[in-house]
Length: 335
Image 1 (cartoon, rainbow, N blue to C red):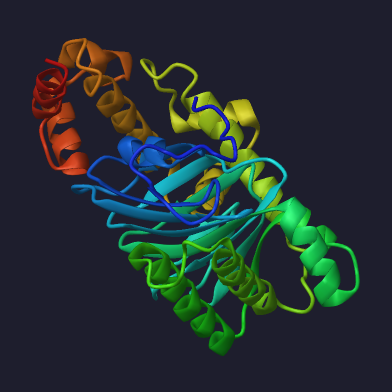
Image 2: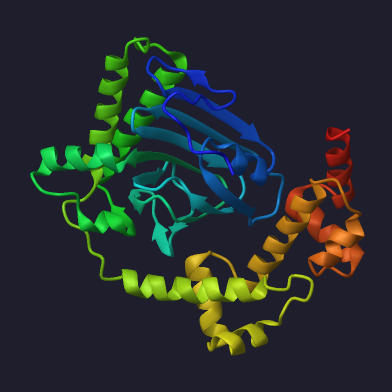
């Protein structure tokens, strides 16, 4: 894992800005693991859920106590991980698309994903883009108190999808993208830390003011219960990937019906248990192939693929290339 940053740390490939610990960074990748591992100081794990060649882009602008994000992907993903303790995240779809699912909750176009940033679980559809902000509690709490004359809302300790007024959401998207572009182009006096602080405060206040005045958390227990079923099923299905359990056996062990299990998977991950398990196993094979240290058939067997012809077809459908091509490229890259 990457070490936690110090105020003077500059991530590899980042462009320094005008204050200590402030920088701009961007990356493009054709592999989900490359994109997940590259994001500075965050510990992320991505799975490619939908078939096709992957192409992902991400940009980060680190300001004092606040990181601005813009991310896009052509393929459906499950993103899990830790964006830092003692911080809160805000995110919003950038353009109309099928709904993302945040912590088991559907996220329409004019909605905000908000809450603690230490247990991310986000499923995104094909051709999805988002903007986001991750803010330190030490910055958010006093600003919240000045704006509302009361302590930080307790519901921020959850992970929620909340509605935003359409006009406010559109204004926020425009301001966020403008701020990212200005930082990237350095067309504000970013050699002065005061300018960075003013930019930071403007965009953070806009995010806060786009939140609704009141938040209904009554559906959280139901969403959490469905997610617990899915998490238990996933752990069970992947406990022995070389010998995948049947869905009936999974249902028996966790004490639910197949119909309910399918419903929970569709609601939490946007796919069926069978499709999710196959995608995760194929992702596992791809990870090992990119290590370049074992034969295709050995890796495939470790992940429960015993019919190599069908496995090769499934792999090519999922990632746009044969497993042997992935292995050759990995070995060529390592010499």
